[in-house]
Image (cartoon, rainbow, N blue to C red; front, side, top):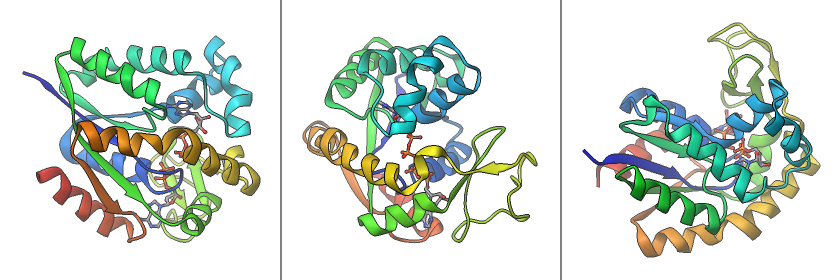
Length: 217
Ligand code: ADP
Ligand code: ADP
């Protein structure tokens, strides 16, 4: 049985992680977030974590070889046997090429590439209000998706913090890095797959509904 991989494309803050979590719950596919994997490595102070800490806090991209090796390792875990929702990977054409090669090896394919987009002012507002759970990375927003108790994760009672790279100066840099290095993937997937554009400026529920429809096709 070939496995199903969904690549969620879109700028920082558009809602990829939020939608990937909802979709993972509904489909049973694994949610693979490259950003979460880097942050776990930083938290555990692994060799990889030490190498990438400053890169993440500066809002730059981790080199392709380190990123590809980490994702390859993650995709060989048993929970990815049926496929995965990829959130934040690939972010460069070289990573996308590496993904094609890996999936050919695992008898899988990139079946859907939803491209969620929204204007820059919305991205900045979302990233500035994002709060992240210290224990497991659950994501909230101070205005649009607040926790039941301020500053506390609904799911595991852990405290919520603001990511260093969600400070406004780094947010601007990350959006620029996305434009320069990741946006070329829109054309890349338009050529080889069925890229489907989704209006990310809608509410979380409306984006989920649009995404659901695009995955039926
Ligand atoms: P990404 O993974 O693309 O960086 P996130 O899913 O982490 O984006 O969302 C960024 C922030 O915006 C979070 O605080 C999240 O709660 C909030 N958010 C996500 N989707 C929406 C939406 N459709 N409307 C309003 N806020 C949203
Ligand atoms: P966002 O919520 O803005 O989409 P992520 O959590 O996906 O952010 O990523 C946080 C940081 O981790 C990025 O700014 C970058 O430094 C690093 N990173 C994540 N994924 C990749 C990738 N595929 N290639 C290179 N660096 C990455």
